[in-house]
Image (cartoon, rainbow, N blue to C red; front, side, top):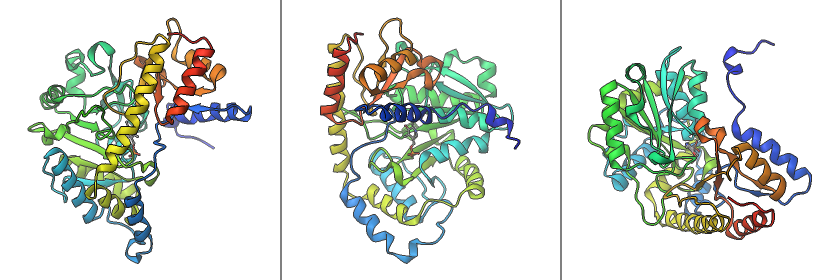
Length: 388
Ligand SMILES: *Cc1c(COP(=O)(O)O)cnc(C)c1O
């Protein structure tokens, strides 16, 4: 067998590695508390499931869906964007369905990146951006996200020669893994920078609805002129607790969406129509289920943060996402601390270094764990003598 060279350059998927370690720990009979992968443990709202149940029996859903997504789904996305962000989208040209946003995020590189082309990727970040860039034979250039700068990239630090050559830039706010948010001022700067250097912005907005203390996120498409240079990846996964359904969307610049659709029509055949129908119902139906989800995560966030503070950590409360980005105790690397939590406390966390060089010195904790178990985790850390 002769594998492709591009495979050799791909690190093993971060969560596949963590799953292996978790399985080994489980085999010892340990009572694991899992703050690892960010997969909501909350149920899909019943009214959304009901629509899917009925849709399964409808024979018109059994066949291949339209490549760009059903009319109904694209219209529902446009309606939701108008209502939620006051952004106008043409459902025909400015909205496309994705088989989960991860699919579109990976494929967009194949539409824009030729061999050696530069893509600007945040560090730390969701690993898919970097790896998809490598798979497309592109050259990722990293934009460090530091605490001092609110985990936002500093465009002025990107050398002009790199900026001029770059074809695509990924942004992700609210941010996984840091929990950081981006305000209007930053989004404006990003649009200006992209216009100046002719770069396509790909903003990953998976956590737009998971925001706390009444905080409301802005879509980059609310910035005047953003549609000239930006597309936004979005997903129902986190908003409605449907990660396994695999349904997302890309919205914004029509030329970029048309380019991505050329890749997609040749690689996949779209998301199951029953899923698109139920997803449309989720977007156009009652939205109070989101408040319920947010309330639960906010409560968990507060318990975890308070617990970590009691152990000497100075970690800040994230305004959005269900991640807490925790600095490791002095002198411990991300991996060392993750191992320690696993061995002494049977607690699974993710090493920040898995998200990029700049994630070193942090761990990520997903609050997809029920409140009593969060309290139990803090108690275990206390008993194991862990201090920050
Ligand atoms: C969860 C997540 C996604 C992927 O969501 P799907 O629509 O389920 O593929 C994309 N980006 C980030 C940063 C995420 O955390």
